[in-house]
Image (cartoon, rainbow, N blue to C red; front, top):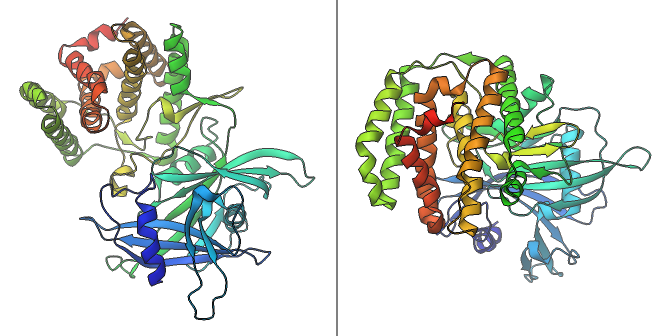
Length: 463
């Protein structure tokens, strides 16, 4: 195992899902399990690795496949080549990031659908109507915190059928992953605005803070996949570029969002906001503002206005709290033909503690997130067209979204303007920090939004 801990760090630091950017992983294997290749040609090991290089230890799920010959077309997924060690080993072993290996993809799906027990992991099947013969698989590109495997399937007669997407969680947390729990609850409630859940895998690993010394959490989930569809971000960008009004799409998206919120409130209950919930939002706003000022000192000019916003939040009447999406923006919604808008990725902000992501929240947080996303669609176009404005496009889309939400929910989000303003401000301050560190030329998108919020532009969104 020492060899594994030596070869993984240099590979892990190059992976987008590795959360310790700028650090060299200090790894220790704390658990794992094996899957079987029916042909007996590929060894499949899932390693749970504890990284102790940061202030807080992080647990990563690292599946590896071991082959005696190179896997064609998978050089980009090669983790290491292990040479013979002179102690009975006579062949080179090629070690791959297993999600890129079709043998692993098939075995992992079987773990779910057959509800197999792999020792420290167990599969759970949700849908009984899914065929399980995998004919091909590939990993989606561009993901940040997880790894998603697209599985091409055939039915019992060998005919191609709808594909699945298996999302493997890289950073593990004790407790239920909201992406699994929330989408499963919505699908079970009959919502067509989320993908059909197929199954999931639950694992366990040592944890001295747990009552029995073992932590438990979701390792992966699988659901239906929609090939050749665009997310709402791409649809919106195309509309901005073509100077096409997006109001009808935004209005229907508002209605869909309200429908999903209502379904969640019914399926997963609601709770009354406590003083601690109010204090948590106030702390978040103060912390976001402090971080933003450290990156952009000019934002200190808003100190008094941020404090006034926090005071209004503390005295406002709060609606009931419920489970929400938690990381809602145009990129989290798909435009599916004959089905409309479909919401995906209910995991929440992946780097937030799981206890925060599973706690009931204001549905208005999702509304604020989508309003910011319309701003970003317009702002990204403006970045590529200096001197030109898409402000009117964004305002029309934002207004239509709010109208659609109000029509479906029976309550206009703008009637809770104090909370909506605060949540949008909180999001914009987060964006300031992100852009200052990653895309300084985009800073004007969130800073201009902060200017508008404090200029009282909310009233301009009313008809």
